[in-house]
Picture 1 (cartoon, rainbow, N blue to C red):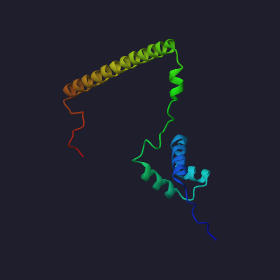
Picture 2: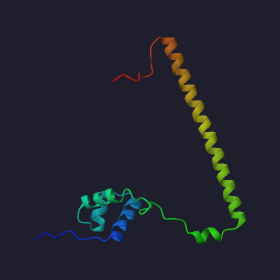
Picture 3: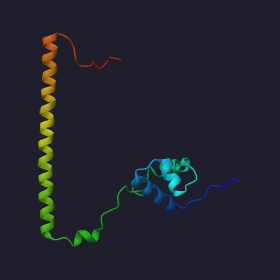
Picture 4: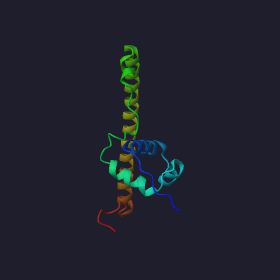
Length: 125
């Protein structure tokens, strides 16, 4: 005798979706581990709640109590760290731009020297 699928409440569905997103598991593995009857059931939940992303946050919201208990020094430290990180990322971006420029120049010179087109044409198939 085959078991009939279980009925899930909205809260249970949202809880399972949150756990699924946080786990990084495949749908099949997740369903098997949590005893969900069928993978298509999880797919239907994903489609249904895809619009309501605020209902299924991928990460938990930070506690507002933690924010109020922080000191001014911790804000200054965090601000300094963020500014340092921004500076590092801007430097990495500039290096990447220079590498791209150098690569483009090298391709231009190779096309000119060998009299062939190296770049892919946009309409080519």
